Amino acid sequence: MAELGPPDKSTKLSDGTTVTDWITRRSSGVSFGLGTGYSHYGGSVGTSTGVGVGMPIGSIGDHVLRLIFGPEGKLAQWNKSKM
Image 1 (tube, rainbow, N blue to C red):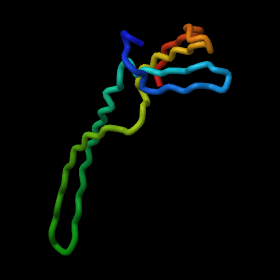
Image 2 (cartoon, rainbow, N blue to C red; image 1 turned 120 degrees about the vertical axis):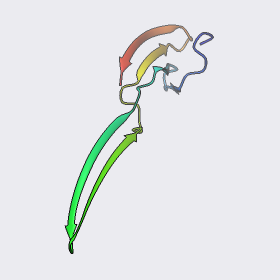
Image 3 (cartoon, one colour; image 1 turned 30 degrees about the horizontal axis):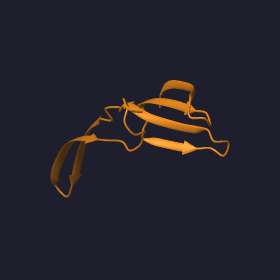
Image 4 (cartoon, rainbow, N blue to C red; image 1 turned 180 degrees about the horizontal axis):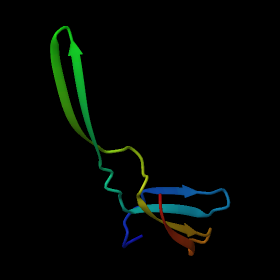
């Protein structure tokens, strides 16, 4: 914990086990969209073009380090995963 800082999420279970999660790398979360349109109404013609950049909400693509500590506070299990 001294190296990683406080966890992003921590849960203490009823048996005394503590599950902690650190996000070690966040996904870029950038998505792009391109759209075009055409309209003809009452003798006039219009066109439009749009580009959008979005940041999705959530943690899909984040890299998570999970450490599980037993009731005595010693590391019992760990894993890395991509959400």
